[in-house]
Image (cartoon, helix red, strand yellow):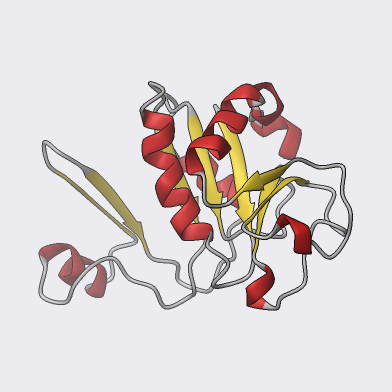
Length: 177
């Protein structure tokens, strides 16, 4: 599988770009998964549902499946900061691409999503894992770079760049242990 991260400050457009890349890659016949870092209090379940009640009763894991989807929820007894590599190990083996959002300090190759209007510093000058910058204002980048500068407003072009450079994004778990 190929794995690429998307790094950037809140409001930079990471989620919008990832959301747009999914269908762009699927149109190329590729199966896409997403791994996302969330804040500690997030929940995907709702009070009153059976799965919520099972978790509230103390189940360590609840897996629920239908003919359309499968979901696994795991409750940690104490806070556990999982690395992106833990999440990748949980994903289905038959996926072509995993788009990773929110693990900005990870040791994965990543595309920085940067907007001048956000007023936040760029990461690429100090992060060797940033291999490209997706921006809507290339003329306002804070520092010259030899890295590819991609059009943030053209997800199809970003998807094509990923496909054209896919050999760079092969994920070998043993390389990260």
